[in-house]
Image 1 (cartoon, one colour):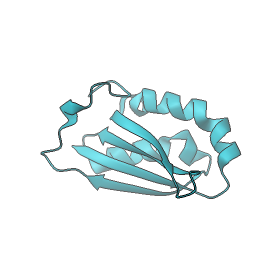
Image 2 (tube, one colour):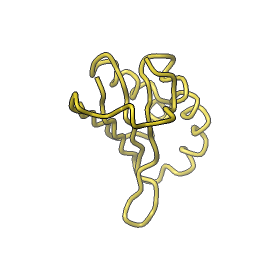
Image 3 (tube, one colour):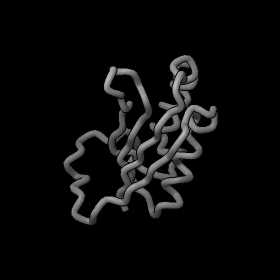
Image 4 (cartoon, one colour):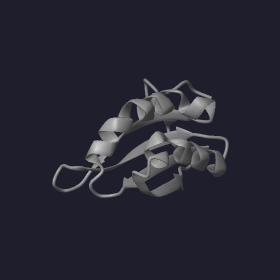
Length: 106
């Protein structure tokens, strides 16, 4: 299944994000040690252009696995993430249109 993951961060986390960004990127690049495929993701910006979170489109066997990936992220473990939203995408989602996934496909 494909899932839209949206992680909203606590305010004032710029320094913590900078500290944990290398581990976060390694986690994403590994698909959470093979739990999921991360097809695409990026930072989320607020109206003022400041980072307020991150999102990803995941391929996962189920929502529980997608949540385990999100909760295993170093940003979450460091207390940066305040809220994780997971939204299943329809079977018609065209994942094949994403040319360069961020982690290996399942």
